[in-house]
Every structure is written in structure tokens, then in C-alpha cells.
Length: 554
Image 1: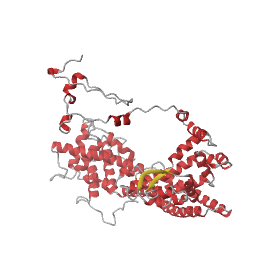
Image 2 (image 1 turned 45 degrees about the horizontal axis):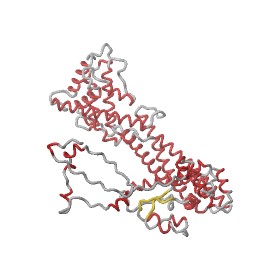
Image 3 (image 1 turned 135 degrees about the vertical axis):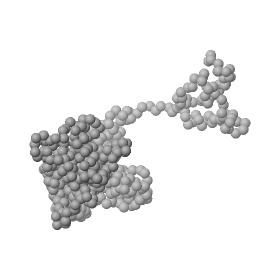
Image 4 (image 1 turned 180 degrees about the vertical axis):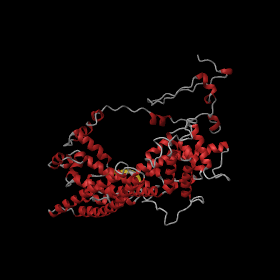
């Protein structure tokens, strides 16, 4: 027998178990050990507290319970179900055998086509169901503007082979299955529009995938039996196989569906890259900052064969981040550059990013990818042009291609104008890219503009972090003010900083025996000070007359 409950509490009497007239489905519940019942919510009856007065238990309708939850009698296994579960390829074969349908396609190919056909769907709209179900309605009526006007029902409608055929014959992307099915009541119209653009392009791609091969088209079109006897994949492809130049039409439609979005995105990329390159070329603060960095680099290399540089490749900027103090590993040469700028009242150079815009986004734009995309457009437009000529010749031979040629011709003329406008913008970018590479000492054939801008962006991010580090150190130490101390000659504080760090790093103040390398530090940092103050336009800088001021090279 089970152990008695603690404190001698009586065990609640067991509830009598009813006898069921049918076998019931069971519910798997994890049992609470009887010894723990009294310590849980189950130890004390609670129903009497919540039921009407005088009721202590629930009334159960046993008949309804048995009707709802009794076990079903297992049906005998069906061979068709076993066959469908056995393999994917058996789906079409089993269906054809069971319904006496004829399968002309290879069984595996028929299965793949059937899967893709099931994916050819479009959003359903309220108010369109009557015509969709009306057998007398034409494919144009079933897929026309009425199908776009109403709000979405949340369900998908399968695209029939007939309405797909008619849309392809006319290169129709404004109504029918290739039109964007926009819901006027959508919470985010922009998001829905983007999704619909992707849907229509994906639809054209799927139709390209199921497009019958020449051998399949011949086999399907020469079938002389009743079309209703064919399996669904065969019927679907037979309808498409009758479209002249199906592959060429679908490729033209694919280009037509994606061109507007590609053009807008590519044009925006070209303009942003051009503007960023122009800003980098025109930024006095960027140029002054690079010169200040060069001066510090020459100062640390003075007296060696590495000193006396007049310029460096932008890839060398990372050296200022990697070069660490031998006495304080947390201090890099870039921290020292910041100290020099602050001591020389040239902190305005640290705000250079204001001149350059969002370099982070610009550095992800590739000029070579944009150029490749433009070449693809040229090839695609040539393909559209050839297809228009072929369709016009077919029309002269008696085939009605008027709607098709009219649709493609309108698109070709519009896209050609946009392509010419894009070429002008791309040419301007390429010229600016050459000037940018030349200005920063890079090889235009090896370095793209986004690579130059990306290098500058990475350096500025490190510079900003170094600036934050220096500011925190000064605040923690109650540090020196970054302004000129009265009674001291300009640049003296910077000179002191250079001398102390140089000595700490093991580099003597003397420059050796070379006469050219022994010029005073004061002259160097007066030049740094001059660069910073000219960029800031402070009173300490002497602004040259307009006749002598050099305009930024563009």
C-alpha cells in the first residue's frame, strides 16, 4: 500500500472510473507521485469554490465525449496511397494509372513539372472569384485589372496554362499573372510592392524551368488523342509548347520585369559613388589630415632611409594603427597623431567625416559590378531588338504578333533611353575614378574608387576610436587643455610631446650625422600647425589671396 500522507492527513477518496462503451483515444499525462499529492494544488478539492452553490463536481456528457474522442476504425491500406508514399516519381505514374491518364513525358520529368506547376500561383482578390470560376470568361477577363483592384483574400490562386499562354504571347506585364497584384489595404505598400516584383520575376523563372524541350514539344504537339486523356503536366506543357519562340519570349519578359528596379538601383549606386569620390577629392580637411600623418611618419623615421617621404600609398595608413608604443602597448602611433593634432589646435581635422558623407555604405558599391550590369543590359536590349524583328517577320507571314511587338517595342524604346542616360552617368564616374586614383597616388587600372574610399573609411574609424581613447585618458587624468598656452611659442607643446615619446620609444632626439635629417622639430610641427589651421580657417592661419589660392583639383 502507498505510504500515508504527512501529518496524518487523510487520502482523498479515488474518483470512480466510468466504463466506456467504445474504445477511446487516450491523453498522455505525466503522473504526480501519490506521496506528493497533498503538497500540490491537487491535494485539496477546488471545484466547490468555483462552481455554483451546492455543486462539487463537473457534469460530463459521456455520449458527446465518446462521439468526439472515440478511436476511428482503421481503414484497410490502399495500394495507391502506398505507391504515392513509396517515391516521388510514383506520384504521376500512380495518378495516371488510377485515372487512366496518358503520360508522354519522362516520369521523373513529369513529377518535377507537376511540382513546379503547383507553385505557379498569384494572390487572390475579393470581387474576382465570380469571373475566375466563370467558364465563359476569357483568360484576359480572369486575369485582368479586376483581379488587382480588390483587397487580398489571403489565399493563392493557381495560374492556368491558358492565362499564362496569353500573357506570354502578348508580353503582358501590366495585367494577368505577370502583373503586380497590389492590395490597396496593405499595411506596408512598399514592402508589398517589393514582394510582388520578386514574385513576378520568380514566376517567369519557373516557367523557364518547365519550358518543354524541342523533343518534348514535338511529342506533345503531335499527340492525336483526346487532350483530356493527358496527365496534368502533359496538358500544361502542351499548351505552352504551342507558343512560337517560347524561350526567347520568356527571356525578354524576364528582362522587362527586372529592368526598372535594376536601373534605379544601379543609377543610385553610380551617383553615390561619383559624389563620394568628388567629396574626397575636394575635402581640404582630408588632404590636411593625410599631410599631418605624413609629417608624423617622417618624424619617426627621421635619420633613416625610410624618412623624408613626400607621400605614401593609402594602404600604408594601417601601419599607424599597428605601430605600438614600446612603453605603453595600448598607445599606437595613431594615438600620437591625435595628440599632435590636439596640441596644435588642429582638432578640426578630426571632423573630416563631415565632408565625406556615408563612406560605410559607399564602400559596398562596386564600380566593376555596375559596369558588368550595364554590359548585360546592352546584350539584353540587343536580344529584345532581334525578337521584335523576328516577330514582325512572323506577322508578315500571317501570325498575329501585333500585341506582342507593340508591347516589346514600347519597352525597348523606353529602356534604350534610360540606357543612354545611364551611360552618360557611368562615363562621368569612370573619369572621376581615374582622377581619384591619380590624386591619391593609386594605379587606376588596379584600384577601384570604392577600394580607395573603403581604405579612407577604415582609417577614419580607427582615427575616431583613437580620438575617443585620448579624450578619455585626458579626462581621467584631468589632462592638459588643447589650446595654445600664453607666453609660449606656437607649437612648443607639440614639440615637447614628440620629444618625450621619441625618447621613450628608444629613438634619440639627435638625428645622427646627416645634415638634412637634423632640421629642428619646431619647423616640422609649425608646418603641421599651419596645415591644421588653414583647414579650419582659424585666425592663426594666413589665408592666401584669391589669386594665389589653389582650387581643389578635380
